[in-house]
Length: 230
Image (cartoon, rainbow, N blue to C red; front, side, top):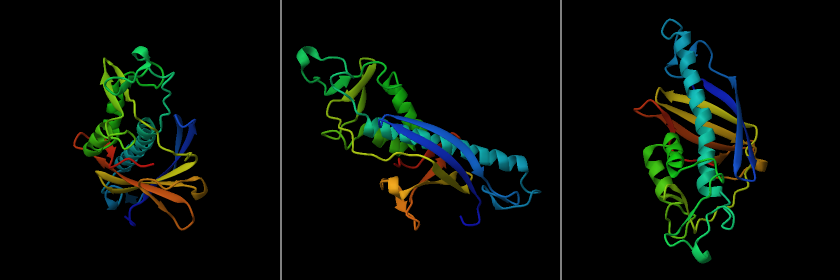
């Protein structure tokens, strides 16, 4: 990929109480007019400036969305500090729920149904990863799902225990390297002094943490991440 220009964007992420995250994104640079991230070295006569810009805009928009959605999914399935005394409908006589799932009260999270949560997952990751995120959790007592539909509402696994995670994302630089018209690599660079190593992370020579993940374009024309990273 050394002969392919990289599209660099900056993502500002602020985590508030480990349950909210906000993004501000802007483009810092892109490939030179004489080359194209989709087709490699090229001349303007072979690929129009409009086509090049359209492709760069497409992968930039996709990466921006996917980085935001990736963290949102990670937060929902790994970090949410649900309070059994205030976030769920009371169970009869204060007993544990018979089916192992509390019923989430409206307004605790911004989603009104399990379908909305699962749609976010399915729009962010490839199919095999979606199935794992939705159907399995290492943060429940028996590996059962964190969420399920419960009488038209959101059921939350009673044994769900959020993981310890104190990484705050801020001034995140994303470099996009196009591999083909259906594949690109996202590199997210964090300062090592404020970062923890997680899935898809490696330490660079300058002490920063670089998290890398591929995004792939499906047959439906939508870009998705190959896996979750944090």
